[in-house]
Picture 1 (cartoon, one colour):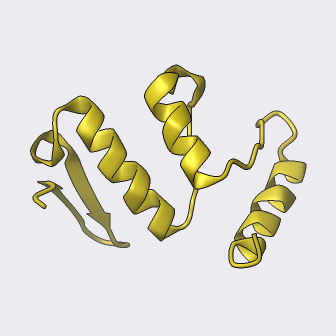
Picture 2 (cartoon, rainbow, N blue to C red):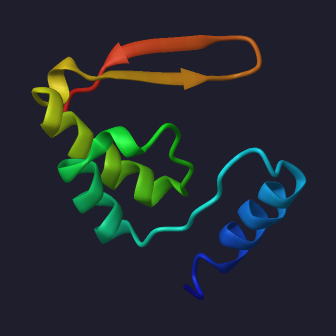
Picture 3 (cartoon, one colour):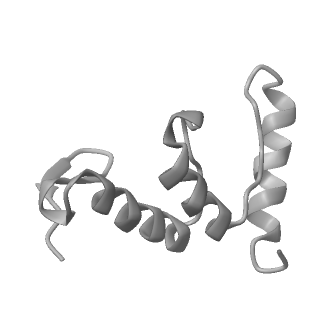
Length: 86
């Protein structure tokens, strides 16, 4: 938790500003297990880039592979949408 401390602290502070939004921290390996066994419990997942890549690959496998999952890149002026090819 030392490496993710600042991220978790910022998330916790934001959750305190919005008490109607449920905040829960979950270790990445447990999150992966929960996504496979009971994905409907999650509405939104917020995480750093590394964990996002792990979850992205897991989720792609659940729905048919990387070729059917969209990818997006956003800037202030443009957006690019593509299929993810790994």
